[in-house]
Amino acid sequence: LRSSLSNLNQMERNISMGNSWLKASESALTQVNNILTSTKELTVAMSSANTNASQREGNVDLVDGYLKEIISLANSSTGGRYIFGGTNTDTIPFELDASATQVAYSGNDTAFSINIGKDSVVPVGRDGKDVFGANWDDSNIFKTLVDLKTSLETNDISGIQGAMTKLDEHMKNINANISDIGGKTIRLDVKKEVVTDLKLTDTERMSELEDADLAAAVINLKSKELAYNAALSSSSKMM
Image (cartoon, rainbow, N blue to C red; front, side):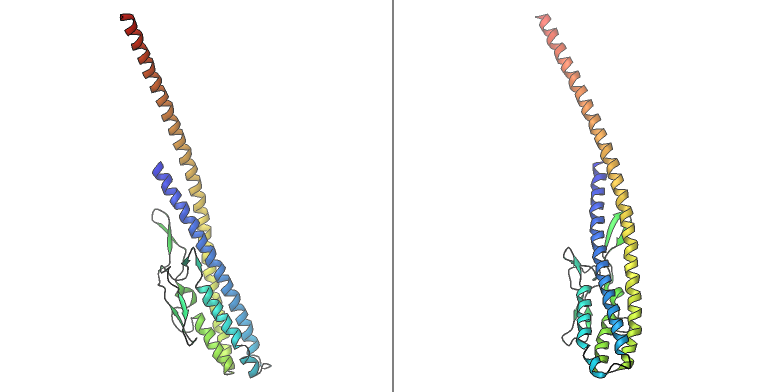
């Protein structure tokens, strides 16, 4: 029972840590989605025939700020460990190069996971490539923003419209990841309730056994005391 309680306590700690990771991930991705939404609204305005080249160029810094905000969110951590770098939790996952034209990924493709039971593992971290783009192509959020900056600088309306379409796909992917986090959160909450009930049952059982052991020890002590007193009485009569 003590071993069982120890395992349940460890499981409880794992679940608590897992929930922290999931909450941090959900918060970061919700903010990323909000930034992408703002960027999409900007592309709609900037692709309008009523917008001139000067106005488009004037929004380059805004998009640059959005890019850096998303990179910062992609490097979110909890408990000093990065959540979007796979199992490379001690390494900053994403870095913008010196020319500010490309973002490199330093994580791996294995999501950080926790054990919540025998042969039961839940990935609570993320492979950053699955979230932000595996290659430097149209699926990559960072590339879309870098290219959008260039399109605004060069008054490329077609490029701005292309970014609009890509942003829709990025938001779909981010929202799918957020939904996945919600499902895992429910799974951990259910497991937590099960662990709590098992701990209560084991604790009560162990208390009953300890009480029974104590009662047996008292009876045994009383028996020895009676035997000792009887021996003393017998010895006194012989003298």
